[in-house]
Image (cartoon, rainbow, N blue to C red; front, side, top):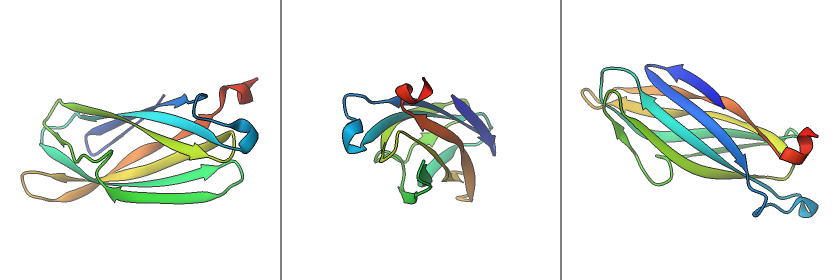
Length: 128
């Protein structure tokens, strides 16, 4: 599990390999990740956009960006958290992801960036 705190927002990531969706003989490895976003500050914030950098172990990089997360742009009051699950396919049995969220303070519409910590995606059989 990886955690980072930026601008009073705590982001925690947990990765789960998905063997039932993966096809190792076809170089298809699927990972789910659960992200918890916690507002540990004292202002109401909203997540507006996401931006991901994804690398497989062949050093191939992809970028993914868009509005919100899983179709949502959650608003977090002080002390609230939001959790979602998404997925990432790789062509190798391991890789990494990291990125950032663009968020805004509801009070004044000022945008700010929140880092998502780099996390590893490793198929369990690769650890043996």
